[in-house]
Length: 373
Image (cartoon, rainbow, N blue to C red):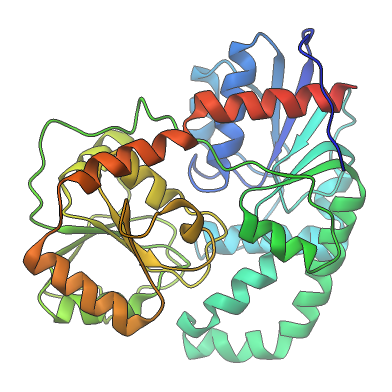
């Protein structure tokens, strides 16, 4: 489908829809960066979400962003991932979130997979059940068995919700080519791929580089088995993250793995900049901010040659992409012991700049203009 736009754009009313906003990271980050750009372009922007935490509300106020909290009631006690899954189930099975959505004028950009309402643009960041399917092998047995029983029902509900959101959207944008392929397998046309943006003025190399540890991320999609074996081999690892479904004993408390928990952006930039390399092991990742953030700080990335990271990391130029667990363990140990060419750090920074918000903003401006026509 051809998308047309013109260069003149009047002041617009923009509504940006988000999944539960319990923090400002992951799939929420692209929405906030796009909102910031649109405010800078003097458009009127409001954000609507099923749930907005107090901390995020304070952040939105500092950015001069209006917001509406739908206050969707959830009973989950397992942290953000479980709360998100419950919010998704409310819409997938009962259409509860969209029922409380207020009517909107102007351009609506839907960044969520939990609210099915008419929108100008749907930014599709990956089907829920595809993620669950890839992550299931890290589930504890008490969750793996119920998942096997409910898998077909969850898949049916997810496919229904995905098609419903798509049918209500004028344009569909995916956050990576891999992500687009997941929707196209469901016979949903994706009109364009726009990668999630990064503020490369905030994420940039610091003046120091100790290189005495490897950095990694602990999240709901992390492959912990690989990390344990790399730690067993003597590699010193520092890990950060706050969206952990379960805390496997095999890595928490490991003599060579230090878990730092949630860190600020300033602390994270320092961690990236001083790491020898960033190790990104995952089960499912449509895009992956970690590799791009790391490269923006001048630190190459070791990851798997599949899904989102295979589109951002350039093998042997800005990092290393491997196909198996055995390869990633062997190469991590080799890099820890022998290092790599310093030119990779410069290559990594240059590569990250193609994801900078300044360039991605132009793509979004074109899409918003197309949506107005």
